Amino acid sequence: MNRIRHQAFEWGRALCVVLVIACQAGGNARAADKEPPLRPGAPSKTIFVASNGWHSAIFVPRNELTPDSLPEITAFPEARYLGFGWGDAEFFPARDPGFTTLLSAAFLPTPAVLHVTGLRVHPEAAYPKDEVIALKISHAGFRNLIAYLDGTFARADRRPGKPVAPGLDPHSYFYRAKGEFHLFNTCNSWTARGLAAAGVPIDADDIVRAEGLMASLRPLSANSFK
Image 1: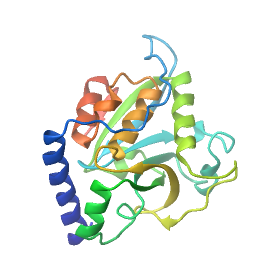
Image 2: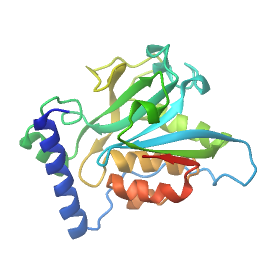
Image 3: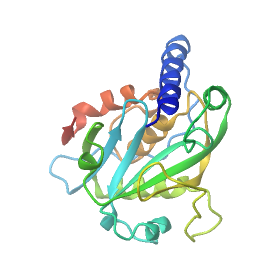
């Protein structure tokens, strides 16, 4: 991560802290239908949520997906896991985002992109400095989550969407996404709504910052890694 991008992230974090404290407003898009929480002893599937302190992403095993459920998996034939993170269409892909881009992303509803990463290793191994939390969800919850991810892609039909930019990680791409990004509808809000749809018992309407998301997930984790 270069110096300018790191500085922009710090500006964004500071703005979020100040404004979230001052304005406990929601403004998130309506959450998807929720699956009931996993029952003790019920069959489950394991997913992962990773955060670097400001951004979050959901990781799922690629071998649990099919092109019918998520057409874009064909772009990642050798991946063991696929990661999905949502964000502002200008700020998120920018290698050197400026302060004007940051302000626009924070205060104005802006178009969104979905960052999809193909990992050949476990998320913990791929992101050793990030917090990675494992969550067990029901089979129905997993189907709901995949439907949520699939529904985020802004495509006209069931053909795989075309990447709009190379991703930030090896084997990653940005795709056009549904929704509008702003200060109270962030990547973490998007992650929380997907988890809630999967049956993870969190209040997605209250999630804006990464710390709030991860704090809600830590007591629920099957395993967590630092």
